[in-house]
Length: 116
Image (tube, rainbow, N blue to C red; front, side):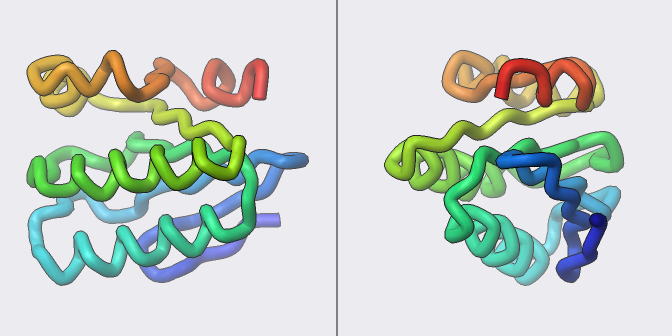
């Protein structure tokens, strides 16, 4: 079943929640706060989470801090966070900040689901 929460479309597959980010650009501080709040609500369900970046063309790096906090919160509940479907220029931001070593980033949604 697929549902939409503001800026995220979610789908549950077993114990995994797939959150597809709907906005193309995440540059507005208000949008970043809303998006962060929506993602944190998903963590409260204590399931592993996949965030699909397929629609994202640009985002401010301040969004990275929200993802780091989200990852820590999931790990504290024994859950996993995976990111997938990043454009090369988005992945480069993670690589430059070395966050590609922190986050489990997969090329496709199928690869992200595998093993969760």
